[in-house]
Image (cartoon, rainbow, N blue to C red):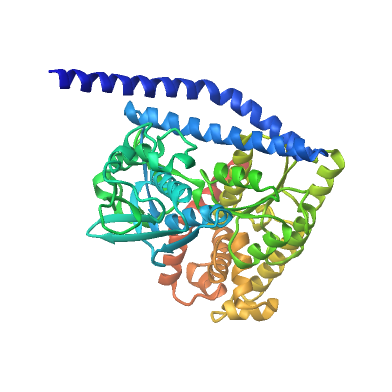
Length: 529
């Protein structure tokens, strides 16, 4: 009886602690945010006195640390009260582990830690809560960063429908006595007292999140000198969640169990953040990574190199930077035929009218003053990318949506005109293909692919086919030609193949489309009588 009473008292104390910390976390987030934004603005404007500058840096670092801790406390409170609602989606676990390792890379280097990542290049598609998995991985990486002496190794495996991520690190070996205690809320290891800088909720939070996912987080019991944490969870079954297995390839859709609807998610967009201030760069990366796939660069030179090597959908850049500033980066991007279609958003404390006008003249799509709201920046980026996506979709799916309706800069306009003129001029040639288009435009196949993909979000062969089908729709609407004649006019010899392509592109057969056009002509004629 005494044991039961003591256990109940311990549970009450634990619940009181969680409730207390959760309440405090709610209360401190607003004033912390109001401190952080002015500090950022002051730091960006520059301080002549080095000592004052150092004080500001320390203040901002600790403000962000408190904001991070308050967020973890709120998550922990939600878990304890079973209020955390999971959002399941299909995602590539291999890519997520690699991205998390890349995110921690600079911190590992700065702290003299060697990070080895053993992840297959092949996709490992899982159906789970990506945000929860990311939190668990981040906690394990952060724990290893804090307590490892030198070496950290991450291994990802999958066997019989179970995913396992192991994070091993050297350093002080966790004792047998502490093996389970470290997963208790608010516990701090005695052996690592000199490295304490948290409140002891990282590992408990990670373990409870693992349980929510139907998995587990344990400290492996082996004889090695390493501390190895292993996180396991099921690959997931879409059929059990009332989702078609065919949706497994739709990486940009997510299931919200609360509403039980699939919604478009912007996480498939790649955004490059260019900022020379490491703290601001990391803050933007952390905040924007909730919605986008983020890469970073410390100045325009590094950014330009990354843009030429990998796919980027949008650039968010500061203006004042060493080596190459944001204005010069924007000019270079907009003058490069291969990159000119990438939207650019300026975020800067240099908010005078002349700078804004100059930035827009350079071709930038948006200009945001510091201090700014992360929500506003996120929504600006989302709106720019989603508007482009809708325009491309309309161009692809609507027979009479004109290419001129797609927003492009001057350099892209010239390219689009040359491209469309070349295809239209050779419309009747059945053997006109990508190589033919490359020859006319004097471009390599890879450059043509990259350019057309950036502007239209399709391959050159898909664009050639679309232009032919749009011309066919015009001719059908005109009403003077039979379907067989139209096939010859657009260089497609088989009417059945043409019908199949037309239906796949516009979700209507040529016959049904012809009937639709005839009815519209009749209605128009009657109205004019």
